[in-house]
Length: 196
Image 1 (tube, rainbow, N blue to C red):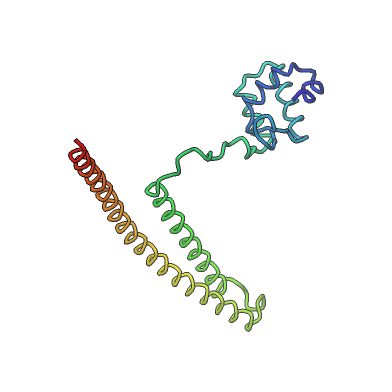
Image 2: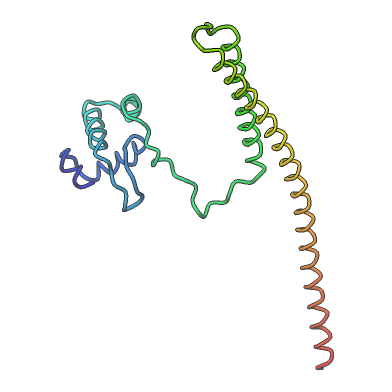
């Protein structure tokens, strides 16, 4: 930061403010005190300085940076080690949606290729043997997709069964812990009765 401040003739505190305000457009790596800016960041800081000196608002500077520079993936904080994991109930709809989208994309792609092979591609563009091999490959891929779709459903049902069994085991564990505490109290009462 000190080096960039010297290059741009800007106070380091101002540079820190810009770094925090416009971090998503400043290419960097590392975190905290180990954060280092890539050489392209100097040009982004220079653009920020020029626009702010010209009287542009922070929103206008942000809009210009968005048009000129790519987003910095490092600016988006990752899930920390201490943050609680997402519950499976929240992930399940997203996974189903992703699986459905992937299957639909594969079907649409296969249909588009079939249509292209059956009528839209001139006969002289593909030799007949290549055309038949391509059709066979597409049919095999479609069969594998259908097979994996069935496997996915089987895995989902097995997962639901396992979740049910896990809930039963957790309830049994809670009951056993309660029984253990009651037994400990009973034995302690017996021991006290014998010693007094």
